[in-house]
Length: 387
Image (cartoon, rainbow, N blue to C red; front, side, top):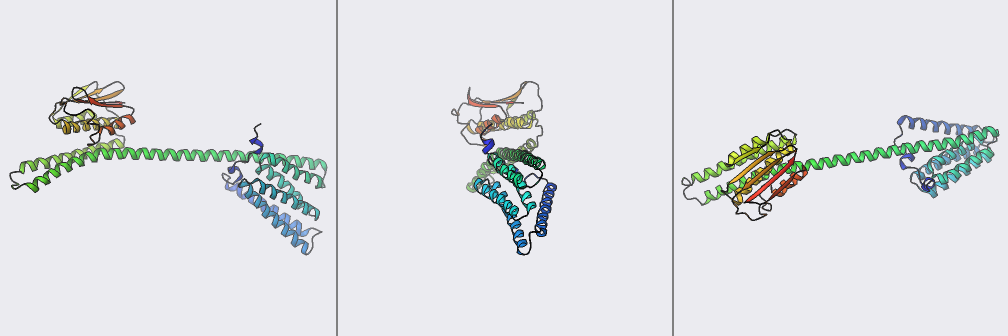
């Protein structure tokens, strides 16, 4: 048997009222009130107590109650020295009542001391303390030895059973608290994950569309500021405004798609890619049997295609581009290849424009997929997402 079985304190949860039903608390309180009232009545009506002796006896009962409360507090705080000292005071108080002729309070006090010692003290200290209290009761109980022995054994068993019951309740409360903490941590983790997901969607949609609009609007502003004849520059201004409007519409569509993904709705990826490539004048190749994709996978394909085409416009304007969408048995693949060849190796990944391929790689990895980019007869971006 391990040493801490004898030296370890009961669980804090078992020493407190945590987890005890309200009805049980009320019953225990009522029992204590009845016992205390009986002790006071016995003291006041005893033949050996008259005048100031009754006052002293009542004061002794009150002090005993306070010592009990202190013992409960010290054991709850797991302070062994003060707990043993207060227990000794209770046993001495019982001897005082017995020597004064108040046998009933003394017997009740000895029995109560034995039970609470077994319930609240480390077992290695509880056993000798309970044995001392029950021994005093057996020697000075002035009763039939058979009844005294039965009562002593019964009280010892009752104290141990109460201890085991309190330990079981304490373990249940500790497990419940751990489960609540785990649920809280899980909820906080899920909330942080969802916040990160929403933040990525906001970044992907707003940063790209708004930054593009700002570029076109700034160009229009400079054109107006420097132009001498606005009518002559009318076509250029109109092109800038139309481009800004297109970017705004694209951002609005992207926002709707992001909201659909956040709601878990299915996104028709092939249709989105056809519209995107048609707007750029790019041919789209589709391989495999088309099917609807989960929201996150579909949005990842759309975002990567959009970012790759944005980088083509930035680094290799006018280059020939090929976009291929492949439906596999266990996933979907996307390849965006340009044949301009003017960008330096790694330039796209570190350009910081729009969504950023680094952010797209993170999105793909969160879905269990991969994203590779680099020079290959120009520059190629390959995405693979399991579905």
